[in-house]
Image (cartoon, rainbow, N blue to C red; front, side, top):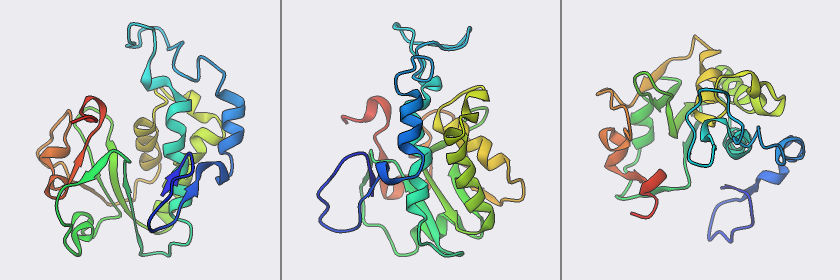
Length: 203
């Protein structure tokens, strides 16, 4: 589990964000910059009543791009890396081979949404040269500050740009019905899990 603080785990391994190369230096550069934290969004950007744009809070979303670097440490080509947001709940026993069935023979399984960014509360990747480059680029957008050249700075938008950089990737969309909003319940992920994102966190 990649964490931003110590958590006593009954099993498994904890990987502190602080130990990921580049994490602290990014915060040193940007954690006091109101623009990088979404409080001076580009003209025409949708903001809340306080002028804040979550789409342009690079400081908030950067950890989601760096955490996979720790997650794939030690994985070999052919292994499967799976990302679930921390606000995901397991709601039923997970059958053996379930993740493999979501991925099939693809390199990546994810929740794509028509005319919107991918929902990256979940994705699975078969580790290999292409997917390693995607995850490295995902992190590097933040670590080399090139994220600020993009139209949006949140992790899902940046993840999509990293995936697009490897056009030979075989991607399996687990949202075949094309749900546009909170698509998770319309996918096979709902067989075993629930994502308590946004206003659903307390449900």
